[in-house]
Image (tube, rainbow, N blue to C red):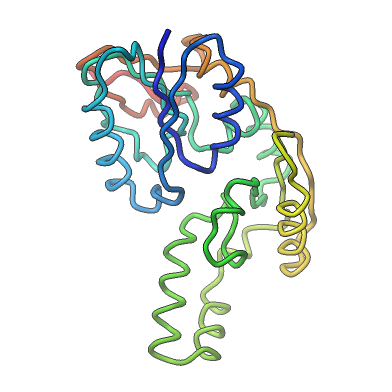
Length: 244
């Protein structure tokens, strides 16, 4: 089977590794990380990409979670489209919804880090975690405050407004073993120390990404759209369903 994989660059190593080992012929197209900060924009981008995919591809796989409902409403155009039943990319890092649920129950205040995200954060550190709801928005706000009020006042305002930090008490670095990661792990550890959080290194699990790329689409873990069908949120453990 020939597959086109559309993915956020946060999952680039995982997807490329799975593609290299897959029995399928897999082409990978990376999209810029952080687009989920504006779900309508991410949805429009992905829909445009889906609309242009034709033979010889036999399926498009979306290495994304629901991403703040960004994928809800996407429509399969000419060929089947497959996505994992996942609320966000952390499920893909950990390999299953059940493992994510276990982690969330044991450590609800976890701020997640992965190598690809850290390496693709332009400012290098300040908002460099996949647990942040809107790192791009935070950087934009800080830049605006610097322009309007000066650096010191901007830093103070961001500290006062940074209530999001109060919801976290642990930094978790997920390592897939897909290349040297010591520098990225150290950056995550430094951020944890600076914020007074505990730090954990967690082994990533590529089984969900691998099955997505390999075409092993168990309905319990993947939604398969036929041409003309659209994604809808299911508001239950299935996460997504075919729109009625």
